[in-house]
Image 1 (spheres, rainbow, N blue to C red):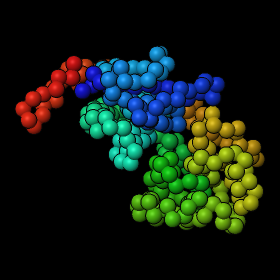
Image 2 (tube, rainbow, N blue to C red; image 1 turned 180 degrees about the vertical axis):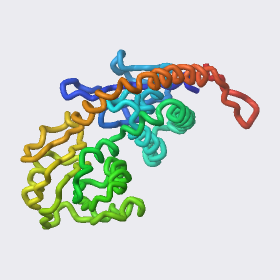
Image 3 (cartoon, rainbow, N blue to C red; image 1 turned 60 degrees about the horizontal axis):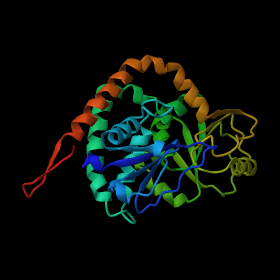
Image 4 (cartoon, one colour; image 1 turned 45 degrees about the vertical axis):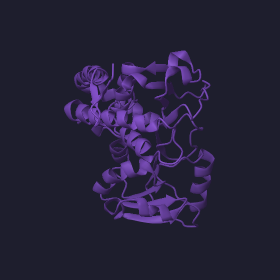
Length: 299
C-alpha cells in the first residue's frame, strides 16, 4: 500500500509562491511551518505539482515519520505536529477523497511507529515543547492572560496549571471553553474577547490565537492591560511584530533558545533518524493480510 503513497511537502515561506493542488486528488495536512499534500491515487491520475516537492513510496513514508517525530521542526522533537496529525486523520469525516480510507491505514502504521521512536529516543527531547517554553518565560508571573483556547493554548495549560498561576482566558466564542478538559480549566476565568473589562493586574500575556498584530494592540488599549511580558505564539511570518512597551517573546525567540541546547540531544536524534530509516524499509516490504485470504504486497 505504501507504494501508492505520494506527498508534496512544502515549507512555508512569505517570499515563495505555493502550488494550488486539487483537493479531489490530494488531502492537505497543514501546520504553522509546512503544508503536506497527501495522495494515494496512482501517479497517472495526479495533476502536476513542483517536481522537487514530490516524494513517493518508501521515501514519502520516511519523510512523514521525520515530520511527525518533530525532526523537521525548528523545535526539534516537539510533539505538537504529531497531535495535529492525529486530529487531521480522525477529523476528515465530511468531504474527503474516495481514497482517504486507504491513507488511514497507512496513518495507523505511522502513529504506531512514531510512538515507538518517541519512546525509544525522543522522550526527553520532546519535553521542549511550546508549553514548557512558555512556562519558563512567564514563571514569575502570578496573574496571566491567554488569548485563544485552541490547540496551542491547550498545550500550554498543563504546564501553566502546575505553576500555580491565576489565568484569565479570552475567547472570541466563550462557549468553546466547554471543549477544554475540566482538569485544565480549574484555574481559568473565561471572558469574551470583545468584553469591556479592565484587568490591570495582569503580569503576563500569552497570545495563542490567529489575530493580527493590529487587533491585539487594539485589544490591549481597550482593556487597559499592561503586562510585563508577552509571549506571542503566532506564526511570525504571517504578520508584522507587535508594537508594545514591554518584554516581547516571539516564536522565533523560543526557537533560538532551543537551538542553543539542541547539541545535547544529537545522539538521541541520530538514533531516531536511523531507526526511522529501518522502520520505513520494513513497512515498505511488509505484507498486509486481508480477511479473505489474499494479501497486498507493499513493495
